[in-house]
Length: 313
Image (cartoon, rainbow, N blue to C red; front, side, top):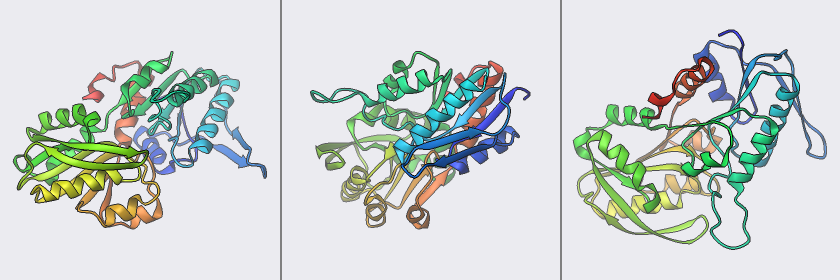
């Protein structure tokens, strides 16, 4: 693929290498330094003039550093006369702040979209946005891919679909859970959850039949794992014989890993949009699936001008 260059920021080198292998294109060379006062300096160490550039960077922890590094890289590519700049953001930080939930608060997801656009991005490729409306925050094309094909393939290899019930951990995830249940020809259940404060939740009841079933809890991200572990406990109390969880983005901040270890969950399977911490890697309950081929295929089709529609299924 002449004219295509792929680079990676420092947030998720593993998935960047896997995408590079899928494309059979070596990662371009970038030099990143941090001054003593915390300022970030980046340098593109090869010619990108007239190249279509894809820069891979998850805006995960440390969110602000990774976001700033991405913005600086985009500006550097623009000033180096790249023909097109594509931001490949497997995990889009600030996505949960997508609307005003109370007076005098920002819509941070929109601000991040403006920053990326003004920095010079021509297209964004991302995965499982927390809210689909974020695509509308951009005035440039956004390909919001879904990890569903990767997760469904894994579910079919591990479980008999007649034995499972797909569970949404809250009302907001019902559409996602219903889509999975339909493709797997499985049952559907919903956790009735009351949230008392940010990062704290209390699961109250189960809508649907989970007795003697393998409960598969689906979510787009797991942060502190409070919602997830509470849901697992209630599902177990309602007669589920096993509880497994699947998510796209393993944020796993604060006490998340300890909560998962001490919970009713048998496993948490996440994709590699965010690199696991060392503690999470050592957990026998936490497993990962790679979405590098999915993202790599989206890059190829975007570069060639082919449709990416089939990747959304």
